[in-house]
Length: 333
Ligand SMILES: Cc1cc2nc3c(=O)[nH]c(=O)nc-3n(C[C@H](O)[C@H](O)[C@H](O)COP(=O)(O)OP(=O)(O)OC[C@H]3O[C@@H](n4cnc5c(N)ncnc54)[C@H](O)[C@@H]3O)c2cc1C
Image (cartoon, rainbow, N blue to C red; front, side):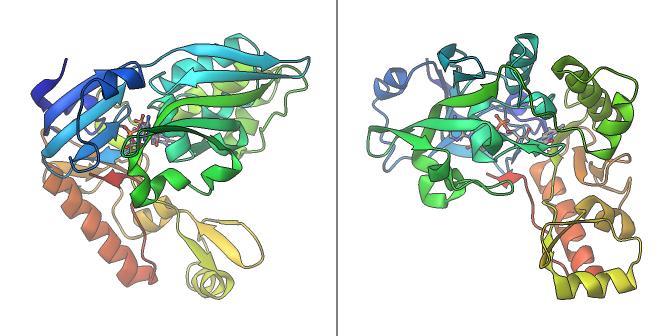
């Protein structure tokens, strides 16, 4: 049933009390087709768990949300298993399912909020693993042209927090299911990340222990969305060329960075924000999380504008101090 004038407060992890003119949860594309909505001319938005979004105002259109949480084995052999998972499956429940069944590849992405569908949109990543490493196919439905398509991993043009689904003309592509390729044995553990490595010392290296350690690390440094509204890392880590990197390093010897290649360096946006004096900073009811400056929080009852003002202030200050324009990772709707 279509709901009208629907509050999205519990459908975005910032907890912003914005409304959608119309809201519809569906299982199958056929449910959407039977709506007879004019997706070509009408305004619509595909919502997952709302954990990577900033609703900037009420949404004057139709918000659709998949609740397809089916999981099917497509094929398997001695080494690999291919699973087709519904877009509405809660991401961390999927990770838990894999770990419990000893399917490897996804364990480092434990406890990331959101849904399976969005894992491909943002190419989610954490602790040295990205969704692109395990996605084999993405099943989509083109809402404007009423056509189902299957995209290969290559077709998705995955990059750092980027995929083909982020091109603006592609917001008509509804992801219905994703197929993941996971290992059944000879798992390739990715445990070189400092904190993960340290916490695994004296522990058996297996999927369960890696998941537990990662959950533990994340819980200690990220705010619980049920208690403090946020959307995880608000900004992307900026990537600069060697010239700019060397210039900064000379000026700021404690610069936190990761070398991508001889020419490309990824800088820790959290470090830049902290150096600019924003750790624990508040502006109205919006704030910078005290344990992780990359996370902006709703301190309670914030309006979208308060988060936007804080974000603008941070971007401007970082630009003045470091001549770097940081960009939001969070999607503004
Ligand atoms: C505390 C916290 C920690 C986080 N940690 C991480 C992290 O470590 N790494 C990381 O990468 N991200 C992280 N995030 C960000 C976020 O969890 C991910 O980006 C997640 O994939 C968003 O999923 P979602 O279902 O909530 O998507 P939403 O926020 O609802 O939507 C995100 C985008 O995907 C689109 N979309 C959603 N579903 C579909 C679909 N079925 N078809 C087509 N488009 C769709 C939406 O239109 C929107 O453009 C974190 C967020 C929080 C709150």
